[in-house]
Image (cartoon, rainbow over all chains, first blue to last red):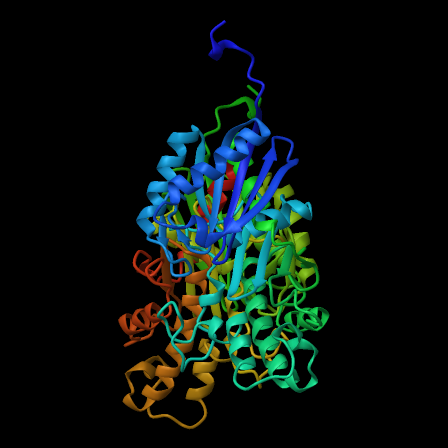
Length: 307
Length: 307
């Protein structure tokens, strides 16, 4: 028998790639959502002008190692993505040309004969969290307070991306410090106040006798913490009053810090939720924190498009 | 032949009722969206403890006059409505018991053998505006600055109502005057600053030599107007950055006032829209102002459920 008529013994699998500013994490899932492989490399080693050969080598290795047939691939990036999820619109958080990414997508599709799309990284964290918490059929908001203030909208069937693919820019609603121009160019975005960036800036104003990780454990920081959380809570309550979700997932690097006052933060949010509804019925979940969640979320989204 | 076997010569029609604090407006449309009748009565005459007999008499008259068979009815109210659109949750803007409304719905369904549902009034204004502007297949936000700050979300197929039926409470996002308790009970809702109520309160602080309708024509009001519009623009930009709509409809009693600086308001909104998207592609439409739009919108929604 010619080779192509032999029984295909390769395992069907999907690949999720979460490319952050520092690390790129990769997840492989089979059709039953079983994890086949988790790995990470430094983004600087892969996101070079040789990005396609780098990716190809890495993926070929995985395919050979596990005897896989890839059916779909989702690549998460901390950037804005076109509505069709085929183009990168801006890469302010990555030092690489947008055009290289668009070429990468076409080359990967040709090389591996599978669907490849981009997705905003925070939406992949959300895809993981709704799956992990069994709320895929609900209206869910994801509030991820990390370096910025990431936000994602899940409307029962999947991620809501808006008319132009850029929905959910909570970090850039105009309720920050009006005297400050945000990295996005607009004045007074929320992230000028409520973000890990602003937390770090406050911490670095003077030499401190403790590491940043212990910021929430220092009593002398309480006035800053109160104001920081109050403004963050107002932003979360805003999304609750507008979207009326079943569930709100709260997570991100700042929320994961030691002694972050999670219950107090929920109380501050509740103050500004419309009564009686949605205040009395909205449900809060703290996001599980693992650096691989975004990559697994990417693979879960890949499973959706590979059907 | 017995009467029920005769050919039914009655015209199939739907009824839209828009019950405001002062007037109740009624629209009748045939299956081709042709207006058969528009009328209004004082709400105080119909929203009494005899609300069902009052409605029955009024509807019977219309049916007889036009020889109609009603297939569906939508009743718009300035209140919060249950997710299934069968119950009124709170009637702070109408002096009538919520229980009476729930009974009314059941009695009307039985009496006229047709579907009857409630809807939030602002969603019916939106139903009219998306139809009138031919954007039913788009993602559309409706911002109606009137007595309060009404807001409605249209996601391509219809009104987005959220998990508990109360989505779109822009007037109650916590970006108003924090020192003030809103009529809803929460501190610092947007409507404490950006609403016709607040405009009127400012106007009534001292005797004025001009009617409220000419508020925007008085040069001495410019500082208040600037601050009022800036805060309103920030709220609208917030919804644009979160929902990423194709189209934003701007309307309401305040926007309809003489010399309201509509173009300036759009410029203020644009300042805070995320660049390049959605800022460069979002499209603004000024709502047509007619007091019957809500009632016609109610009838258009009734056509949707009567299919």
